[in-house]
Length: 209
Image (cartoon, rainbow, N blue to C red):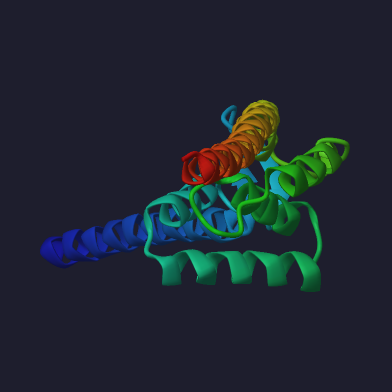
C-alpha cells in the first residue's frame, strides 16, 4: 500500500511538472507568434507592425550589388511594382534603396533622393532601423549627385576646351591652305611671265641677223 501511495504521488508530481512545462511552452509559443509581423527596435521595444527586419533590406541590397544582371533586373522590377501597387513607407523605402544603389542599369540617385526625403517626413511610420537606412542612403545619394554634377561640368568644360582647340586648329589649317593656294597662284603667274619673256627673247634672237 505504501508503495502504491508513493507511486501515485510520483505520478501526480510528474504530471504537475509536465503541465508546468506545457504551460511555459505555450506561453513562449504565444509570445513568438505575437511577435511575428513586428519589428523589434535595438532597445527591445515593439516597432512598426509588418515592417521587415533591417537584415532583409541589407540582404537584398547585397544581392543587387553583387548579383548577376538577371537578379538585378528581377529585384528592381519587384521593388518597383511593390511601390506602385502597394505604396507605403516600407515598399517605398525598399524601392528608394534599390534606386540609390549604384552598379545596376536602373540606378537613379535623383529619384532615390526625392523618395528618401519624402520618407523622412513620415518617420512615425518607420522603425528606427528603417530611419537609419533612409538617412544613410540619402546622404550617400546627395554626395553622389554632387560628384556626378561636378563630373558633368568637368566633361562639359573639357569638351568646350577641346572644341575651342579644334576650332583654332581648323582655323590655322584653313589659313595655311589659303596661303598655299595663293602661293600656287603666284607661282603659276610667275611661270607664265617667265615663259612669255623667254618667248620674246627667242623671237628677238630669231630676228637678229
